[in-house]
Length: 578
DNA sequence: CGGTTGAGCGCG
DNA sequence: AAAGCGCGCTCAACCG
Image (cartoon, rainbow, N blue to C red; front, side, top):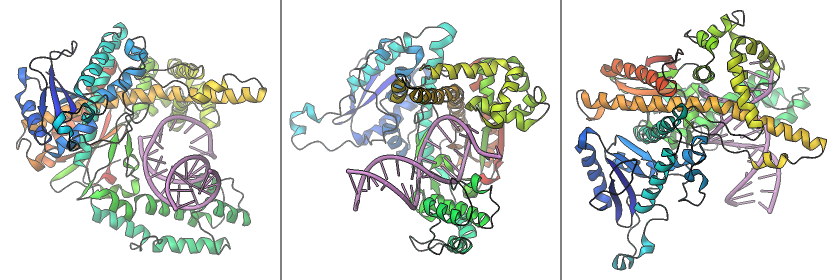
């Protein structure tokens, strides 16, 4: 069953569709639901499951509807996020020939980066509007039921227009489903929150920085280091937070650096370097993840960041607020399981190089990737067993290194693994020429920038050099896009599969949906997931995580001889993982 | 004064 | 040893 859920002046409008491929409204007509009733209505429809299948909710944006449902204690099994799917379909090379991708004046699909709008409760009816059923009082253009149905129909038509060669239509359909599932996971993770012990975090801060200072002041330890720097550099007024100020002081003392970056500072052996680096490290802790961060982002023992699915063109998630995807190792000790629970931290090890192997169908590299440690496997054949070299070469190939040691290793890598190197080289050439590249499941890179087009018209030698530099930069982007984006395809499938398994685990087991016995996905970071699980559910969760990784591989690539191993840690505290 | 940019560093 | 991808956040520095 397919159910449209759209905004309506009096709350929400619900409409059943006969089937996905032929999105005509079924009888009876739309059902209007008052704001206060929606959660109960959705709960009932989820539970009824006609034909054994739960409905698929079709809505404009998951983040506008789902958080309020979750807050009312209602989860849904399946959805179709029209905004996320529309963004994929509008740019995918797989659907580029369809009317949908060509038609620029269809209902605008919004930028996924826009913050959530609370659609319920809707704004109160206008004073007179309720009397006259004022059409102007309806939802914003593009947000009503009929717009939603039309947009969904257009997207389904586009999908139907995708060719069957190399399973393209099926792959794109899979991507749309995985992306929609990811949107649900993101809302559910934000709802659950990362278990965060404020007391442990504060202890970390006190250990490193000293007691909490009054607002606007440096903590003791930072103040002491700042005083030491001023003495060592004979600069009584030095503000070590100012790069310009700091650079001048360093120069006055004969330390000739071109920037104040730490790897450049490490070159010098001056006695000021060590306390300076210490200052920078602690200053970072204090400003980015100190007491004010705790005040702002941790509440009731949970860190609840906002995840932005589709926020990165490659398909990776972005986040907004609290720096959720940059939790430094220094404070990971504060991420701590509730009593009777464990954190299961699972990491798809060496995901991107393995994805490259599968994309390029490089059988020699696949052989090497049979090893649990892919880099060791590569090193064994082609690098005389030197793992560090093999790793640098492979990373260099995926990022487009041209100089330095990584650049020098490229020919060596290409001799042993020509197919893998050729694959990324072709992606780079396409990007340099202004072309588009596409991930395994069909997410395509954006068109070249304005700058790229302008630079194409260069005439002078100086402009030519500039144009080549811009082209190479785009080549590095598309080279990495196919790998990073296909890894994101894999991760989205992994998440979607894991979500489904955790849900069956939840309903099948003791306690049903009741409170604390649930295993919950609480964190996701590109190639890593964290499940917060009751101790007695840990083994079942581990099995679900591993099965999901296998399923993700087969969904993307079929049964190929490339392993995607998952490294697992069952811990009380995040800092003990890895 | 508020808004934007760049440097620097955190994560993958 | 410090090049080569994708992000977010904070501060200083700069701009109007």
